[in-house]
Image 1 (tube, rainbow, N blue to C red):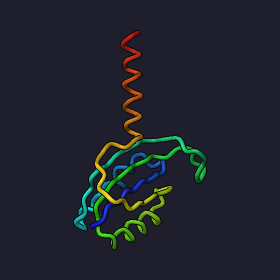
Image 2 (image 1 turned 30 degrees about the horizontal axis):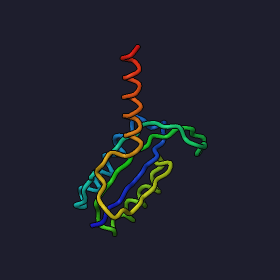
Image 3 (image 1 turned 30 degrees about the vertical axis):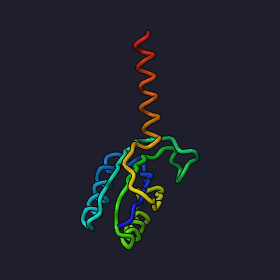
Image 4 (image 1 turned 45 degrees about the vertical axis):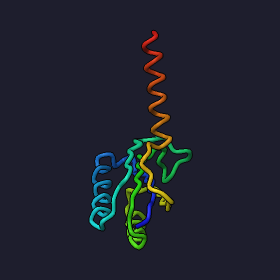
Length: 120
């Protein structure tokens, strides 16, 4: 079993289908005796440049443990799925369970904002 980090950029027009897309890949991973160590839904975010005329995308981060021969199947499925704008699969050396930098900075920003509101 190897460790992988997958980042998905999902079509923002498919907001109601995002949960179904995520369930499909989770089911695939568990079906093949893999595991998910970290799952983060980053939500809808602004793109640096338009992709297929979209200026926003829904981002999802998944850290998994899975047999290396099954990654090709996931990648093929991601490539075929028209709701996936872009994807990135990275092989990692260790299992990652900590909160990502993006969610940490989001939480810190919210804490600072709450502190400012309290002082007002």
